[in-house]
Amino acid sequence: MKKLSILMLAVSSTMVFAQKVSDYKYVTVPEKLETFKEDYGLKDSFIKALAGKKYIVLPVIKDNWPSEAKSNFCNVVNADVINDKNLFKNKVIVQFKDCNNNLILESKGGSKIKEFDEGLKDALKEALIKVPLSNPVAFLPASTNGQNTSPEPAVSVVSTTAAPEANSYSNGKLDLQKIQIDPNQFILAKSGSSVPFAAFKTTSKNAVFIVKLADGNTTIGYFENGGIVIDIPQADGRYSKEVFVAK
Image 1 (cartoon, rainbow, N blue to C red):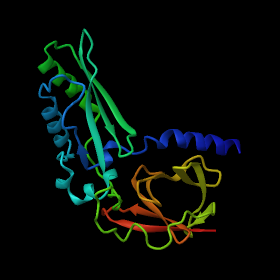
Image 2 (cartoon, one colour; image 1 turned 135 degrees about the horizontal axis):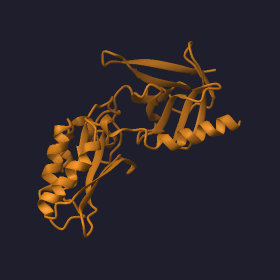
Image 3 (cartoon, rainbow, N blue to C red; image 1 turned 90 degrees about the vertical axis):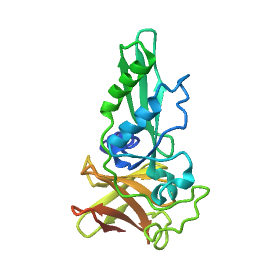
């Protein structure tokens, strides 16, 4: 019981930030950087830097977004630049947040150049060093975003999506235990193992989850017919359906 408690605590501490900025393809930037009195060319520099790291910066008007972004806002990461200057240095903070306003990445940069225009851009350049190249994972299926009227993809709900009540699951090769961390998170782990096979976090779509696998890959999972399904990434870029049936 003590080992289980330690495992649950460790997983709950890491799952909040399990999603990586590099998992995203699409990013939004505010129309105006609110913490700056003037723009100083920062927004343009920020957008160019993100594009250079292979992210697609979306327009302000959501009607002009591509379908993957418009059908589920959780396929988009929200980026911002915050003024953190003091009397001695120009300083900025770059933040990336998910669709639930959870902080995914925060990076700080500073410059001794006193002129605002050059100094802030220099600080931004330093803050962007920690921002990884985009390496997007599978898009989440469509959800209700208020204005979304797109049809639901077949992957979302195949049959019943009621949360399964069992705690033991198997795909015929692996026997796993379902451990509920909190109302929004659970893991599948081998009995006695300290490393989760998969960590699940809720999305805006009922019974569909962002899944962090033990090998570091991020994918999606969902409930189906009382079991748990995970789309497992393959080497050729495709996904295979792995079904864990309640025991």
